Structures are given as C-alpha cells and as structure tokens.
Length: 164
Image (cartoon, rainbow, N blue to C red; front, side, top):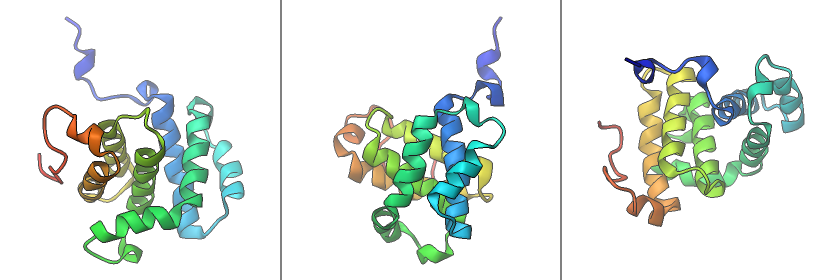
C-alpha cells in the first residue's frame, strides 16, 4: 500500500515555484526591514543555498514586481486590515505582497493555489497565527481581483476567512 500521499511534504518535494516564493519572501523581508534596494537583495538571494532549484523567472517577477508595486499592493491590503499597515509583521506584509502580485499578474496560477501557497509561507516563516491573518486579507482580495474565477470555483465560497 502506498502511503506517500499522506506524509508531510519534504523540502525535496517542493516545486520550483514554491521555492521561488520562499526566496522572494526572504528578499522582500530584506526590503521591508532593511530598506535594501532590489538589485543588492537580488544578488544576495541568488547566492543562497538552494536557489538553483527555484524558478528564477517567477522569483524575478515576484521580487521586482512586488517592489515596483508596493504602493498599489498596500492600497489593496490596507482597507482589509484591523490595524495600521506599519503594525503588520514584515513577514505577513511580504506574504500579502506576493499574494496580491500573483492574483493580479499570474493568471496561470489558480486563485486557490495563490492563497494556499501564501498561507503555507506564513505558516513556515511567520508568527503563530499569521497565516490566518494573511488568509483573512487575501481571501476577499481574490474575490475582488478575480471575481469570475472565484465565482466559478466549486466548493466553499471565497469568504471563509480564517474559518475551517
């Protein structure tokens, strides 16, 4: 009997896109916390162990796209927060940037995949319940940014928030 589908995903099982999101998150964190510019962050990140296994094209799009569009992303995120944006954890802030960028610019990535990947990033790198906060922001944004796709999705509605 094959039980491999029931085991937790190992690092070796991660997709190149998942790895790209992880490296982009780390790079965006450096941008938020240190104010480092994209070129320097990019050069540093590409030298990190395991980067060669990441989808470098997707990483480039996420890093440079998120940094170029911080104001637009923050304008979408801020109205959904229960506190000022400055009080949001830098990890959760960066994860939400990734989610907003992918929802807006990566139609090849289904909205549920965007949410799941961002929730997993927040679980891996963020605070204890940060993934619930990220979900609570990105879920309504998915419905706003991809209304037809969300409406056509079978199963749960897009407004489940942090429940379930």
